[in-house]
Amino acid sequence: GGSYLLLEVDSEPIINQNLQQKVLSIRKYLKKNKIKYENLRLEKKSIIFNLSNQDTQIFEKLFLDKENPINFYYGKYRSYEMEHEIIKDEVKIKYSKYGLIELKLSSLDQSLEIVRRRVDEVGTNEPTILRRGNDRILIELPGLDNPDRIKKLLGKTANLSFRLVSQSEGEFGSELLSYENNDEKLSISKRIILSGDNLINAQPNL
View (tube, one colour):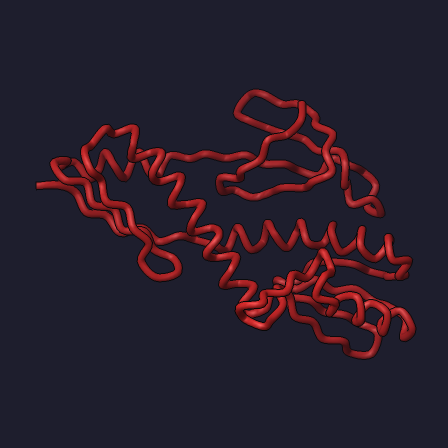
């Protein structure tokens, strides 16, 4: 006897969360390199902004530099994390095929660790926890005949959300954050924006 479960990892919230962070990174990168931009925004899983013709050429050269900090180059794929297209003065950036693969594998690895920690709470002997494909986790628990208990344990909510509280749209609220956890609320000063409904691994400096 025992329990057998097959879990599927939803990576969509992680993709959206990382795109929000990427918007801030690109904004800082453009300002650091003195590239003037307008109307920087996130639409339909794409980061969009406008540049002058001269700045477009400068941006493209920097964006395709293999050492640039905002568009990682994967040597094993010979591809970048993000791909871009430029139509007139509008730049559109989105995750490449290989960027999505790496992001999904990373979220799957993080989910595996979360599952292992929660299964350890059950105290079963020799559990089997394995990756299945790019988005699934197989769990086998010998000697444990109550799968509903495992589902409840694995499905319990663990949320950590950071929300923009700055009233200045131009600054994107890049340093002032708000943290809410049930009835507890506090303000945090930090140079990272994280948001989402899934578990986020973050250790704010309070």
